[in-house]
Amino acid sequence: MISDYEVTFILKPSIEESETEASAQKVADVVTKLNGTVKNIEHMGRRRLAHEIADLREGIYVVITFSAAPTQIKELERQLTLNEDVLRHIVVRHEPKKHKSEAVAV
Image (cartoon, rainbow, N blue to C red):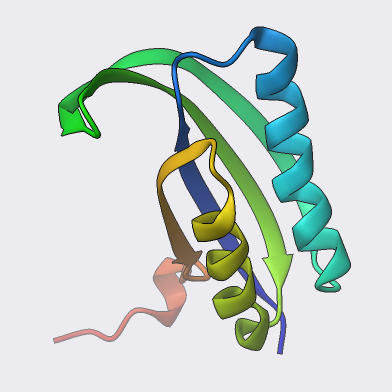
């Protein structure tokens, strides 16, 4: 069963703009290799971190929305962990929205 996901990751602030594009594309390529479908890549830009990570105070945020099988998410997370440019990442599954007619009356 295919589900919709969103992966948000923070890149090191020392990388150049062109390298940011390449890193985001690398993650998108991993999703594609895992038989997923990339829907959108959004570059959120350089932002201040809530707390320091490895003595860094800011990072470059990227959000990718995609569809994939739930069994492929562990491999995606493993690849993100191995990527030296990624400081942190989180993968979130999007629940299908229910229509008001499907809501249960109490």
